[in-house]
Each structure stands twice: as C-alpha cells, then as structure tokens.
Length: 341
Image (cartoon, rainbow, N blue to C red):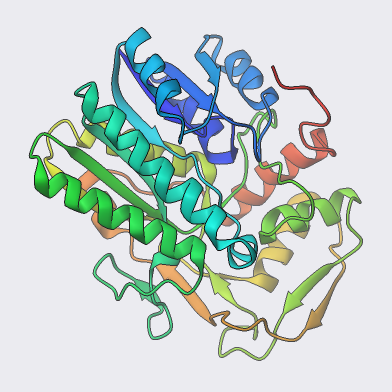
C-alpha cells in the first residue's frame, strides 16, 4: 500500500515525502519540475535510508495518472502539485486556472476510476478575506484577492461537491499560513527559482550574499513595530500536519477543512532580528512603501487542527530561523544546477 504524492519534489512536498518514509509509508511520487529539482528527492532518500518510487509527469495528464494507479497499489493521495506565486498568478491567470484547477479535477477523476478516495489537499490561507480579522478561523469569510487564491478556493469547492456526491470520499483540505525553515539536517529546504517571493528565503539569500539587502514594505502599520505581522510555520510541522490529516481520514467521512499555523504572529522586523540572532549576521534592509493589498496582521486559529487531527505546531521562530540558515549556508546556491532525470 502506497501514498501518492503529487508535486513531490517541491519545498513542502519533499519534506512530506521524508516524513512519510520515516513513518513507514511506501511513497509513489511525481513532479513535472516546473519549480523544483530531482535533487531534493535524492536527498530525501538519503535522509530516510529508504527509496521511493518516482516518475516525472504532469498532474493534468490523465494517461500518466492512470498508468501510475494501474501499476502501484495506491491507497491515498497527498496533492501538492500546482503553481503558487501570487504575483505570477496576476500576470498569467489562465495558466494558474489550467494547472491548479484542471489538474485537481484530472487527479480526482482518475482516483475515482481506481476507487482511491482518500485525499489530502494543499490549500492556502489566501482563500480568506483577512481584512477585518486578526486571527483567522476556518469559518472566517472567504474572499481571495488574486488568481492563485481563487484557484485554491475553486478546488476546495469542487472537492466539497465531490465529497457531497459520494460518501466514500474522505478529503482533508489544509489551509496553511507561511511555511518557513528547513529540515534540521540542512540537506533539504526551500529553493525558489529566481528572486524569492517569500520573506524567509529572501532574508536567507541576503545573509548568504546572493542578494544585497531586504526591502521591508511599510513601517506604519498598527502593529508592535509598524511592520506587517504574519503566522510563520516550520515546514516540518507542516509536513507532519499532512500525515496527521492522512491518519485522521481513516475515521472521518466527507470533507474536513483545517488551518495549519502556530496561532502566533511575528512582525517583519521581529523575523529579521530572530534571523540575525540565529546566524550572527547582520541583515541589511531598507523601508519602502506598503504594497497594495498587504494586511497589517494575519495569523491562524489552529485549534480545530488540534481537536480534529491531534496536531499542533512544535517549533518556534528561533528554530525556524536556525534551520533555514543551516540549509542556506550549506547550500548557498540551493540545489544548484543538478540535472533532473
């Protein structure tokens, strides 16, 4: 019996594959390498001292999916495959709807064809309207403001309808906040293409010398130090949340939706100071104007995840910074120019 992981070579996918292998699961994995490298999974196998089955392919390719399901005894799926950059989604919305939504439909159709109906879906806190909420609950207003967030909400709604149409489906939708950090070994971590979109890898690349300084967007928010406050969650905590959801679906039916976050906010300047403390390096930064649409404060209420999944985040912001720096300092060019196969 195997767990299929889509988008397995990515940041969260690779850490989840490692935790699955460590927990004794067999893993069948695939990725199309649009924003990842095979090297991440090679290192996962080294860390786990176990092999996984890997195939290169696209989640929209039904024939590819059918071949996977026909050749492997897959019992459940963890679905990460999808584009994830907010700015890019605004520039190329059709690409996001095609890849994220069409791919998720194709996956569910092939799962249904092979009577595999246990699914953990990687959603996002971008589905929420956080304008009037500091701490976000699962029943908070849903109003994504960009095509990336809208694609995630569309998939949630599709899977909600699917679960309502057939009681055999067991689906967990996980809305997570700001993944950061890396595996404690420093062997796998976040390796974005080009200039990072997210704060932690940007800070890391400044610290290692790949980038000259950090731009802090806004210093006049009504927060502890005027900079934006977000909920940062260690990627290993996040990976373990997917395992907890997978196990919880054994006894659940229909669709469950939970936040994965720490429930604590951290400002941009607090994160910079924590990173400086963890690394002993000064992070040069300058204050620039706010970005349109950015919120002052946004963090999760993770209590439902604890009650439904028996899961809660364990790692604090200092550990997140230490692990992120260990990864970046050991791998200043990320996974480098290792060729895929």
